[in-house]
Image (cartoon, rainbow, N blue to C red; front, side, top):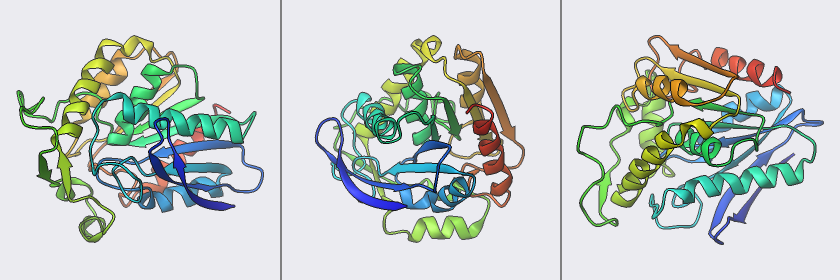
Length: 268
C-alpha cells in the first residue's frame, strides 16, 4: 500500500508525506532525508525495507522538495526535531503495537540524533548514516554566520556525495534538489549541535551509527564522538573504508541496507 499526501506538522506547515506499507509489516521505519534533497532519493532503500517486511514513512523537510515552508530555511533548531516527532507520533498512532525505528542520513541523521536526545524512549532504535552530529568538517569560526538569516549560499554539496559518478550526476540534475542554502539553516545546525553535545547523556535509545571513512561532507569523527558521548547501553558504530558520504547510494549499498535490516530485526 502506497499513499502520498500533504500533512500539516506541529505548527500547521504542510509537509509532503509518503508511506509504503507491505502486507503485515513487522515494524515501521521513519526515513529522514538530508540537506537540500527529498524523500524520492530513498525509493531504493524503501523498496528494500518493504521487501524485508518493514513499512516506511517518509516526508520532505519543510522548505525542501514538495513541502511548504521558506526554502531550505529554519528559524529554530527545534523545528526539524519536532517535524520528525510529528511523523513518529503518526506512525505510532496508525500502527498501534508495531515497533517504530528512525533512519536518518546527513542532516536527517542530525535530526534523528536530536530526536533521540530530546525525546528518549519513544522509538525502538535509531540508525544514522553520515550524520552531522558534531562540526568536525566545518572550518573553525565559520559558524554561526554573522549575516542576515535570509542570506543564501549556493549548494556545493554535490561532488562529495558519492563515489559513483552516476549518483553525483543524478543529484546535480534533480529538479527537487535545492540549489541554495540559507544562513538561517546553517546557524540552526550550529546551535542544534551545541545543544546535542551538552545533552548527549539524554540519548539512551538503541543506536546504529554508520559513516563512510572517505566522507567529504561530514567528518566520520562526528559519528565517533557522538557514539562515545551518548548514554545508550545498546550502541554499534561502523566506519566503512573507502566509502563516501551517501553510503546508501554507494555500489555496496545492498550490504549496508542488509546490515540495517538485520540490526532492526534483532530489536523487534
